[in-house]
Length: 63
Image (cartoon, rainbow, N blue to C red):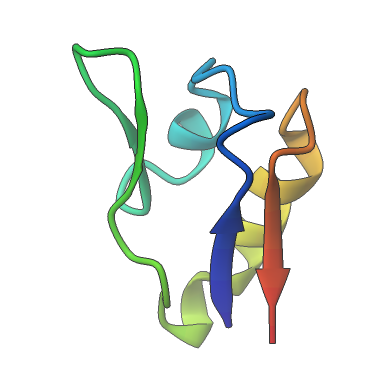
């Protein structure tokens, strides 16, 4: 599984970080950083929830 972020859509609202803080991080510069672009399979449920809850639909998964 690979996380893909459309940074043109992303507003760095940190919803994904609230769901999966070990995978997503919004830093003091107000930009989203993906800490694990290819997270382990045991994180799939959290990542899928972050994808669903993203208010701008900027996050998607491949694989």
